[in-house]
Amino acid sequence: MALLDVRALSKSFGGIEAVKSVTFGLEKGELLALIGPNGAGKTTCFNMLNGQLRPNSGSVRFEGRELVGLKPRQIWRLGVGRTFQITATFPSMTVRENVQMALISHHRRTFSLVSRAVSLYADEAQALLERIGMGDQAGRACAELAYGDLKRLELAIALANEPRILLMDEPTAGMAPQERIELMALAADIVRERGVSILFTEHDMDVVFGQAHRILVLNRGELLAEGTPDEIRANEAVQEVYLGGG
Ligand code: ATP
Image (cartoon, rainbow, N blue to C red; front, side, top):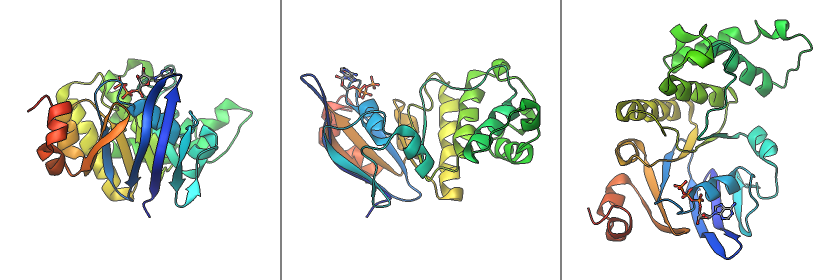
């Protein structure tokens, strides 16, 4: 069985069937892309995987354990993390402090004095920042960061939670093309090094075909195709519906 085993997942909003009986697996150490035109159901899928939305039917099993019915926080604690389209950092804190806060939260430590927290996990936070190539920016205020660096910082914050699975919702949105490729190449390296599995949505096809190990194509809520980048490129149904005949 796959690490994350999604079976016949469905969700309707009123009369709209946003996701229709979607089934797929995410393997350990896999970088899996979920693509599809606007309104295909990608965000709805993500929201069901991390517990923000309850499916009408279907199951999501993580290491055999059913996630449907659990709250987002419980799912996060089990090791299924998520990054969002909108960055969620504390702008007035430094880059390192933002990662420290994530580490403190992960280790369930609480402190009555903020000053005590300042030195906690500083080395671990620095190491994570070095890994994503932001070691030299650790002391800067988040508010000063370029957008691309903020997105990289978000990856470090997500990794602070030591996820087994990371759901990345349009991680490269708003970035320049070269930055997008670099960010997902970094994600691919991290998948390899840590054995994390990543499921990501993405509109940039260069990023998807260049980095993903496997691709899922959603169309109007249904899984249209699934395969390696080469298989998806050669898939006629995908070409017709999604890639505009190209
Ligand atoms: P995009 O690429 O534009 O983000 P998407 O693939 O993520 O699109 P979803 O946002 O999951 O697609 O939307 C799937 C369908 O469900 C759309 O028709 C959308 O209008 C509808 N939908 C999503 N959320 C809701 C909601 N809360 N209430 C009603 N309809 C919704």
